[in-house]
Length: 530
Image 1 (cartoon, rainbow, N blue to C red):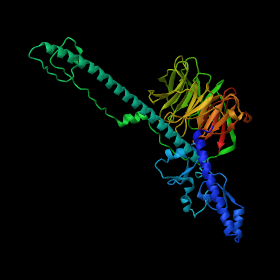
Image 2 (cartoon, one colour):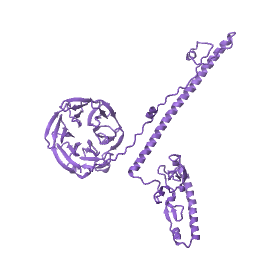
Image 3 (cartoon, rainbow, N blue to C red):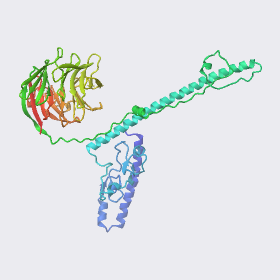
Image 4 (cartoon, rainbow, N blue to C red):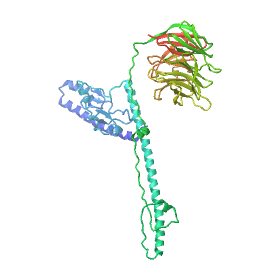
């Protein structure tokens, strides 16, 4: 619904347009009377050209131009119309713009908009729109800056209100102090005057105003003096760092254009080979080293396999009565796995000795190592312990925790090439991606809106060296492929590719995708990059 301000503004603009139209009609009449012999100009007047009517770029002040859109709505303050122009920025603006972004600039009438911007381009006529057409990236970036400005102004307003409240509280305390002291001083002066009136030869009592709390608090003490110490204001010591901490910080922008090193997606992944799993039901597969993989399943054992499917080593874990719920291999070959029942993270060294790495509050599930040497663990609900993601250092010391309303049952975690942390959540049925400062970048719901999948059931997750995010969708029997910003690219593998209930994923150093199928006892390898 249009407000009264916009209605009044529209009436004013219509009147201005009417006056311009009258001038235009008078110009046409004058041309017809004085230049009837000039056929070209008569034809121009009889067959007018349409312009935007906003500026001189479309030559609205010349004969033969009909303004079809005298004034356009402001992009930032709709439904306000652009009846003015900023002569410094050379753009049309509305009434609100004159008081906000352009309050310190030179403001003029909309028809005073000049063509300074086109003077450097061979006097080429520009389009009738407000701003140059921006790319999608530029438009999004502009919106991000506007959001930051609004948030900063809102935060400043909150702090200003806090300062106002503190000031008002201080002034109220001064008022209360003044009333209290006035009552006490009046009482003491009356008592002293009464006493002095009874004492001969001492009619003039000495009154020294220096406030003394002991005198004012004891009613039985009377003296010839009234000690009053005036209140003082002790200024605080404003600290810029503390004020900045209260206000907050603005994270700097980052522009990082990554190339794929001439590695493009194949139109269809190429199956390379498949090997048999050693477990009854396969859960995870991790790249080990020297074209070897580490495989876990519904058992206490971990298996080291080669590309021929031969079992090179069997590692017996210590996991109580349950199998390892999460598995990762560090760059130095150290194996870490999570003990769900016992709420432990255990470490297997190169000599295959097993030791306790860390104790957790919740039940640990997914685990991964980062390039900085930290260990990230997903903790699911346990009694009154909220689901969270925690970081440990290389010695098992807790560094930090992350909780969120969208975090209910974190299942798997992986660090991307841009240091983003990708987390799958089996309870929320989504993927949450946070940056290294623990701010949410995006949440992916499984591309359900397309109708190609039903309930999104994410299990394992991994990333390649380009930044692609690959997710195993267990129930739908597909592998989702996303870019590093969360945009869906394609289903890189589906059940039409003979994919059966994928659970574990990993990408080796040759950018080959390893998929562990839970029930088929198969581990399949695909090439998906050129």
